[in-house]
Image (cartoon, rainbow, N blue to C red; front, side):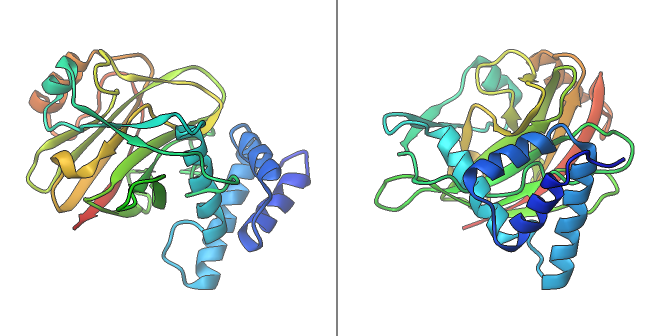
Length: 282
């Protein structure tokens, strides 16, 4: 399978070396959401970059910067808007009943740059051609207030694929974004488990009755809430699992299945299951 345009592979090459201006970046990301050939090329280019630079980071700095800027622009599109921080509870029941929500003011940053890649828009195996994944971003809050910043990003991977990890400070926050290629709407359940075995809930958003609805044809679309890590997270590893579902599941059903069902079993209607690891530090 090849792309009918030579423009986008050339833009991918340029992105990894010198970066892209904002309008080309936005066009490339829209194209990657619909073109499996360019997603595969993008993935190969990222791997080649990492080997050539002996770099352990998942993404080149040029990609990370532009993604971070894009994320902040969407989270805080006007100076008056506030970023919403949600408490990620250790029990699904508390989220279904309502959660504590804090607010952090964030002014729109200048320009338009980034914090990960578009998806990662790498191919996650030859089977499904549809782009599908979740990315986690670390958010940091300046000591004196002001706009938050993004430091680092990591993407979910399917079982058997190399898994990325993201280091975040407990004094900051965590933002998740999803990628879903064109096609039918899907639904997301995003849960974590820390080293002590406590369950942490990230999607659906606080107060939502069922799994989060995902709009098709989007790349790195932020989920509604950002999590303030210091409220209910502890130092150490958190394994986050993303369940992409063909239909919505009520929060109560999800809780019963995850807490009382067989360990490691997928949720009903699971199309894809991916995971990543958070390493939380003081």
